[in-house]
Length: 112
Image (cartoon, rainbow, N blue to C red; front, side):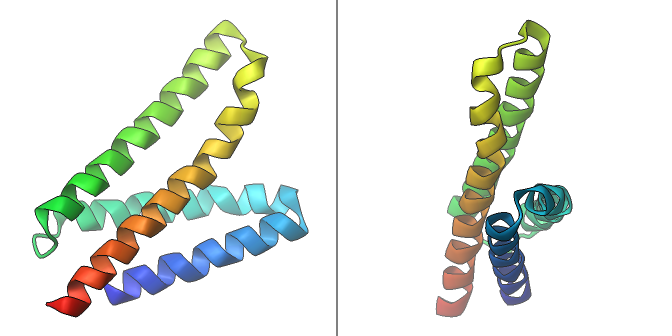
């Protein structure tokens, strides 16, 4: 769990720094970062050593991804251009939420 936490932390900080320097490359880096976070969350979801509270937080993470994909489909289908800014900012919010989850799990694993 410690490796997963630090890996996500370093990746997230790198993503934010690259997004500040050049938004195009930051957006490109967001795709593999999101893939790594989903793989990490699947690992956390199947891990039986984390608490039930943390398992629920990971489930909420999956629901937020589903909500984001649903919003993309909905706005594309109805051509709602006013929601494009919200949709483009949601992956960063989801990534921040996942960082909070991994921090909570990291703290739980240190106190056991």
